[in-house]
Image 1: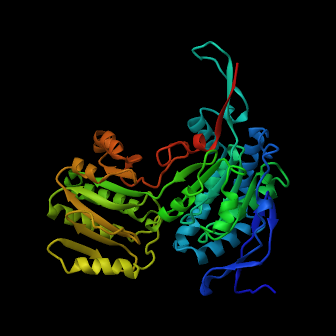
Image 2: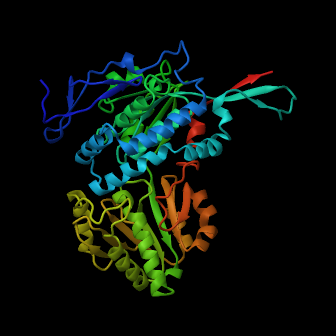
Image 3: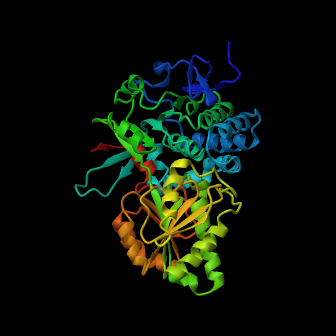
Length: 461
C-alpha cells in the first residue's frame, strides 16, 4: 500500500515512465519512494548505435522546440506538480523556484540551441554527420564528426535549470543519457523527459534518455554503472565530495566532464563614489549579483572588493545592505534564515568591532560584513563580505582557479583587468549586476560543454 505521506518519485527508462514505491529514502520529515532500480533497463548496449545517433538534427530541434511550448502550456499538469514537489523539497525560495520554472522552456528554444551548436562545435553539420576537412598539410582527404556520446549525468539540484540544460545538451548532441536525480530536485528532469515523450511518443530522442535516483556514492550501483562498458563521459555537477567520489571511477575510455564548485566575486572601482547616483547604481547592481538565486548559484557574488578608504567602503556597504531585500526575477525579498554554523562565525566577528563592521541580521534579508581581508568562512544565505582595496588590481591576488565569475564596475575597469583576472584563474568577467546573464553558446567553467560532451572522431584518406 502506498503511503500518502511519502512523495512518489518516478524513473524514466529509455523514454518509458516507470512508477513504484519499492525503495524509500530521506529523513522522516521528507520521505520519498522510488521504483526498484533496474540498471539493465537504464543503459544502452554498445553493440548497436544509440537511438538518435543518425536522427536528423532538424527532427530533434523540432521536438525540443515543441517540448518548450508543451512545458509552457503544461496540458497534463506535470510541470505544476513537479514545481509543487520541488518547492517542498528544495531550499530555494518558492518565488525564485517559480521564476526558474517559468524560464525553463526558453532552454529549448531553437535559436538558442542553434547558437550553442554554432559557437561550441563550429556548426550544426558537426553533429549531423561526417563533414569534410580540406586543409590538411598532407593534402589527403579526411572527414570528421562530433560523434554522439554515452553520457552519465550527475546533476546538481540547487537550480532546476541544471536539469533542463543537461537534457538540451544531451539531445542536440544526439547522445544517450542517464541522469542521476539529485535528492533536492527529484522532479524537474522526469517532468521534462515526460514532456518529450508526450510531444514525440516512442521517438528515438525520447528513447535516448533515462533518469533515476540512487543514493549518491552508493558503490553497489556506481561501480556497475560508471564504466566504459556503458558510458564514455561522466558529466558531473556538484560539490567537492561529489566530484571526489566520481573521480574514483574515471578510467581509460571513461572521461570526467566536471562542472566544479565555484566561487564568484565582484570588483567596484572608486568611480562609484563620484556621485550619489553612481553609488546607488553600483550598490544595486552588486546586490543583484549577491542575491542571484538567493546566493545559491556558482555565479552569485560572495566577496566584493571595493576601491576606496574605509569610510567610503562603509558607505557602499550600507547602500548595498539597503539594496539586498529587493524583489528581483531570480531573487526573493527574503531568503532562508542564516543557519547556526554561520551565526557562530559572525557572532565571533561582532566581538572584534575594531576590525569588522556588520550590517543586517540573521533573518535572510541580507547581511554585509566589512573586513580588512576576506573572512575565512564561506559566505552564503545572502551574507556577503566587502573588502577595501587601494586599487582594484590588488584584488587579483584573491582570484584562483575556483573563481568562476568576476563582475566589475565600471566597464572601463573590466577591460583593464580582464587579462590579469583570467591569468590568475577566473573563468568569466562581466559587468557588475550581470552575473546571472550567462549566455548559451559561450564557455562554461573554462570550456565549451558541447565540445567536451561529444567524441571527436576521424575518417582519414
